[in-house]
Image 1 (cartoon, helix red, strand yellow):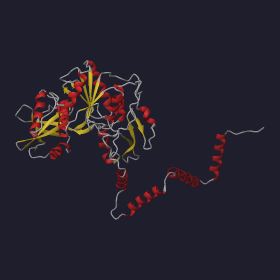
Image 2 (cartoon, one colour):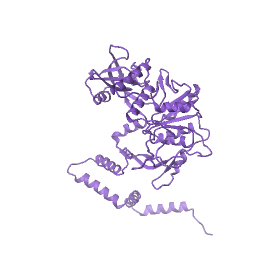
Image 3 (tube, one colour):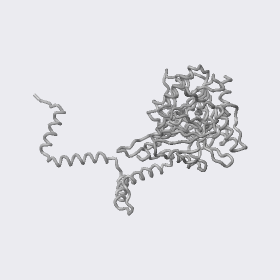
Image 4 (cartoon, one colour):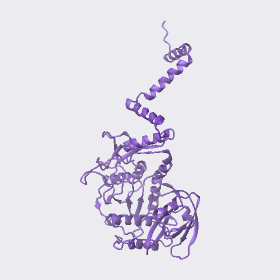
Amino acid sequence: MVCVKDSTNLVKEQLFRYNRSVPRFNLSFILCVIFVYALTAGITLRDRLLIFILHRIESNAYFEPSAQDLFEGAMSGMTDVLSDEYSQYIPPSNEAIYRDQLDNLYEGVGISVRFHTENGENKVFLAYALQGASAYRVGLRSGDQILQINGTSLADKTHEETFQLLLRQTKPETRLTVVPFGQREPKDFVVQRERIHFDSVEGDYSDSDGRIFRLEAHPEIGYVRITSFCGTTPQEFGDALARMEKNEVKSLVLDLRDNPGGDVWDCIQVARMLMSPDPIMGDVIVTVRDRNGAQRLRHRHFVLIEGAQQCTLPMVVLINDESASASEILAAALQDHKRATVVGTRSFGKGIIQSIIELPFQSGILQLTDSEYRRPNGTSIHRQRNAADSDDWGVIPDKTVDLPDTTQLAVMAYRTLRSNAISEQRSAVLDHFRQQDEKQDNKFKFPGTAPYFDPQLDEAIRVLLER
């Protein structure tokens, strides 16, 4: 009778015999060799040369560099030669700031300021205090004039010097001397520095109860402005939809102007709230292609889901030449699926994807462009270098409303003020700021109709009212 041993037991028995016959030192050495080989099996001669040069500089350079400086310099150098302004290396020293930017966080007192020169005198005004932040809690409001920061007068300070006084504070408290809007006597307010989250979803205006997601002059029309896409955007947008439903609005303006993009996954979740699969375009929101043109498998994450749609209202989407990346993905999907009319000016044309690679050993973050987006109809969103206006890139509005650059900047600044200027005298404050801007340049007059002074929004309102 032939006996066949279990193969697992046979291997264990051979290893046991080998361990008894080979000295322990030799066995450890062999295991180390195998481990090193496994790590370096893919290393080329060029890679070895780079390592050799790195060590040569570290050992022999007359001005001795640190190993950390050499590593960070090498990482930055490699991304700099990619001819790609979006790929970058973020060293550990900047990692916290980078993450805060992704999450719409910053450290401060929660105010935005604006500058005005009158009769040769520089004046600093509180544009708005973020609701819930320390400045708002102590009673600071839009329109207040800031005279001093920690006892330092701002009368002779430049814009940069004023920002430095506000931002580069080491103490946990900041004392602001202000003249409240509509008053004459200054008051002191002590505000706490803290980590503050900026809302990524804004309404037409705000009051003491929060943001109002319908137009003041047309309460039957909902209005939502997404300033960027971050981790809180889907929740904020869902809350806005719920408030609009409660207010029984009949249509919606989605404002994506000046939205630079952000996290694509958060954009996808917003898209799913606004659309459902349709017979013509199917379920595609966006597809992903690598540098060889191959479609990436992860594109299946970028599709619509039956039953996820929360809003079926008629829509207009506002875009401009600063709408980029994730905001272009959303606008293109809404346009291709015939879900919304797009109004404004052609978008920026940034349709490439950056993978966020967290390096081991707390060595920083690599943001690397590795693929591009295609809109549902298959055309590219990204504007290639030297691309012509006639080429396919970005999102072209269904109805174009052009604005000169200076007018666009003024309109969007006023739009931001409308969204955030919480004050008992809000209309008076907004009118005061608008008149200030017109006085800065006597030839400039705000375009559009009151109370928005926004020709692109005026066109969006007209489209919705004519439906």
